[in-house]
Each structure stands twice: as C-alpha cells, then as structure tokens.
Amino acid sequence: MKTDLRVKARNNIYFLLAGLILLVSCKGEELYFQYQNVEKGDWYRDSVLTFSLDTLNANQIGEYNISLELTTSMLYPFSDIQLKIDHNFNDTIISSDTMRYRVTDEHGKWLGKGVGSLRQLSIPYKRDIWLDSARSYELKVFHLIKVNTLKGVERVGVRVFKEGD
Image (cartoon, rainbow, N blue to C red; front, side, top):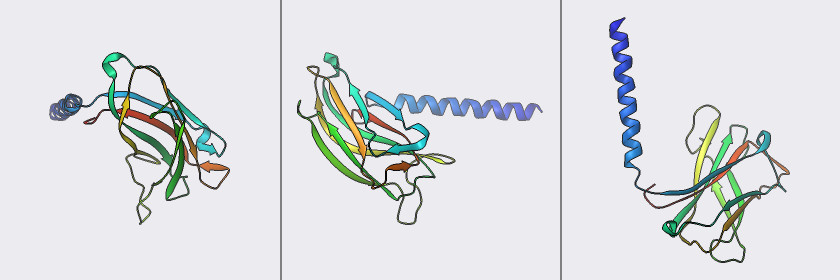
C-alpha cells in the first residue's frame, strides 16, 4: 500500500514539474484568445461570429500572428472547411479573405488535437500583422459550406499572439 502511494506521489510531482517547465518555456506573448460557442454544434449559414480586439496598450504595439481555432465533433461531415473572414487589420476599411482548410487527412483521420469526440484544430491565418494602439480591430467569421446548417462545429476562436508562443 505504501508503495502505491509513493508511486502516485512521484507521478504527481513529475506531472507538476512537466507543467511548470511547459509554462516557463513559452517565450511568446498571447495578446488575445477568445472563443465563441456554436449553439448545439449547428453553425447556420447566415450566422456570423464576431471577435473584437479593443484598443491596445502602448507596450502591446507590434507584429502579431493570428490563428483561427476550430473545435469540431465527430458529427462534422466534411474533410475540409471553407471560411470567409472579414477584418480591419490592415486599414479601417474592411477586407475579406476566403480560405479552405483540411480537417482530416487523405485517409479520413481527424487533424488537430483532442480526445474522445472533440478535436481542436489551430488554423494559421495571418503572420506579422502590425497592430497599434490607435484603433480597435474586428474580425468576422462565416462558413461557406453549401449547406444551411453545418453540423459538428462546436466552437470557433481567434488567437492573436507573438512568435514563439
């Protein structure tokens, strides 16, 4: 019985140390990370997910990378996702981008991380975007899949971070 407790205690210590090392080793800076849940995993074609990044502090001015964070369930019926993104990162005028990104590999295996029925996929979107403190930023995400209700999308997020994170 004592041996089992010692093994558990040792494993807990290793787990704690690994977590601390992971925290300390992150050298990048995360400026913004926000998710929006998709109600009941049904993303309607006319639904817009809006993310707002308010005015930055003077010490946060600089170049950042942006990724879209997609959480899908096994109910997601397609091997890719097509998105339209409206944003004002480059100017006060709204720009639009469309992107297509694979959710599964060529053999049907889900990409990304996760356990059970949920998968988290980080989709690189923009690199080295200059953000300053003079204005607010907004990003709107729409899906372009040719169905009225896209099943299996649980949540969508936006992450703004400096390299190394």
